[in-house]
Image (cartoon, rainbow, N blue to C red):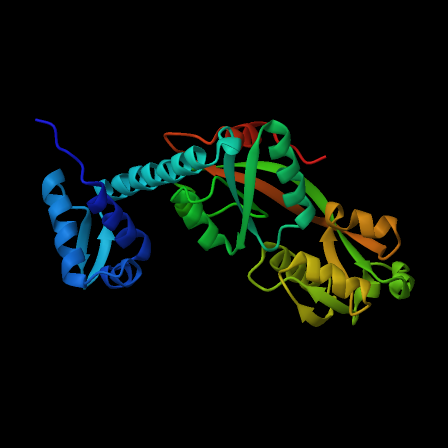
Length: 295
């Protein structure tokens, strides 16, 4: 006997799962909590499975619940895409590509990926910047198709997520022309120098701190920011020296807005492209993951 799926109930389940609680889902859907609880129970009974474990007043997805959520996310994504295509004939062949990027990833890397996407085919690209754990969750839930990061997630975060290293480049210390005297006796010349550093949760900051400690170099952290564009603005303004991968500052070095003070031995910045396994793959995302390279 075929079980007919009630898509209203499935949508309610998806909202509860994505919001994390019936209370937040009810507020978003503008429904009463008892009504939403009843709809969820009806869906579970019709499927003959428990979608959530109820523990200490918290809803935790069961294994079958996680599988159902994957399908639900894909079903409603395809539904939204169908409406867009049917209502806009000019975009009937246009693919939507959602990319997540850590705010510490240089913007020219994101630009290069976007340009490569347009070369593959007719597509609309949306970019979401954020923190690693947030973007990994979005990737795992298939809300974004690809993620650009400068670190590899831990093993527990890597379930169903694939990664490919795009680049490994040396880290330079750069600054406004007024700092070029620090080239002499580098890296000892950095002792006491003002620095614009990445924030402490970043891998590059961890590597820099370790390098400076091991070489008995003390630097003056006059500013901390994870936004690479703002780091470069502060560097050009002469606020302090900035550590950056070569591809992030090559244009500023070329037009002499910044000068290279030196390269930090054994320090490099890595860029990774990530995707999550899914039953229906975004064709543009698949080709980018397989073929995209940083020049």
